[in-house]
Length: 498
Ligand code: SAH
Ligand code: SF4
Ligand code: F3S
Image 1 (tube, protein in one colour):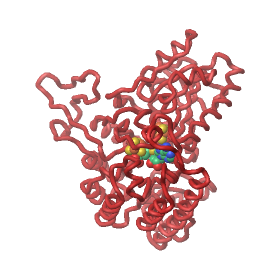
Image 2: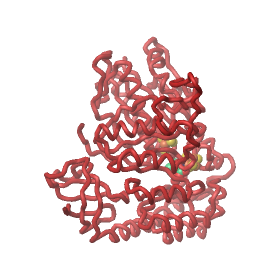
Image 3: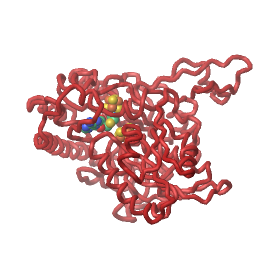
Image 4: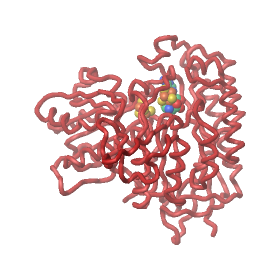
């Protein structure tokens, strides 16, 4: 596998990467090429790997050049208006390619497809197929429909679909880190957020299939898995009891399969997130486990103790605060207040000393006053986050906030507040990294640094990016001890020590 060194960020609508790995299943080849590009969060990225798997099974192979493709899929994000704008701009570029090759199929997948449904076909004439996040199994039929001259839409959401049985094709992979989806959808209805509408009801994936996927990844040489869900702390899966004669029985339209391979899971009580973390950590001490996203209302001490107990569960928690002010949090329908959030931070600091914490912040939510914004600033002073994703509030059609409240904070005020917290965060990111100087970090080598092939890069347990000179004795995928000697606001710089 080749490492193309593309950044993969979570919780950011930045373009994340493309189908750069060339993949095919030669025994099935149908001579058609698929190009797939993903925007949005890691969930979308992971979904593209499921889509690729479904189409490879149909005989497609992937290509890295959309001009060369028979099918172009763009897996979209709706989280903020500019995320959608970026997709529209990209579609203009695909239009040029389609003019040259009129037989090309252009499909819009993911959250924007779900939000706009068939409206997409009216608005964007080049689009042939619109597919929501729960309808990917239908892709072969939908492509057939397009081949027969129709345009096709499937945006049905499901209460059960978790794609548990589909083995994702690892696109754009370095062969070391992989995302593993453990649940889909979200039931939280934060008033600003479009996700419950684009991804549907929350459902947890079968724990047996999760542990199996992570075990397979480890056996293939992967050394880090990131368990993904919009609210991992509400993960809940109950194995069905095995009745005599039902071994291997697949309950229809459910992912809760009674599997004969489930080992000690079967007949066990409900698997919650703490237990799932533990099951994945137990696969092998050399498999690092990360997860995202934790919700402040649901993260339990049990999860924190589990993280503390296992060396291979990374000491890093992404705990989005959104606002430091209780009135705004209530309007956001986050169901916790400032004191509750601070209590969770204190619990993390107490149970996992040295744990890195990152967050998401929204500035200029409806009716937010300057003083209320200062509560967010003071929260940042209190927590001293290692990292933060910060956004100006972007009203999303159909959300509770769009229905109930006016988007009344002027753009320039949102921006000034954003700049203030970005500056504050830069200061704390630096403080956090400086605190690591002179200390030895256990780093998983991910590949060569983007700037020079004389340096390796990898991340510390606390998720800091670390750069250090290549030492031929160690290869990507191995752990090394690195002494941190210098830092920027984003990176530790050091050297391997024996
Ligand atoms: N499930 C995660 C967040 C998923 S969306 C959680 O609950 O924390 C990622 C981030 O995008 C959110 O945490 C929020 O900070 C931001 N976001 C979501 N909707 C937004 C909107 N309408 N405007 C601006 N930022 C938004
Ligand atoms: Fe959106 Fe809230 Fe669900 Fe996160 S928890 S995805 S912010 S509704
Ligand atoms: Fe975007 Fe959908 Fe993820 S809206 S952030 S791609 S769940």
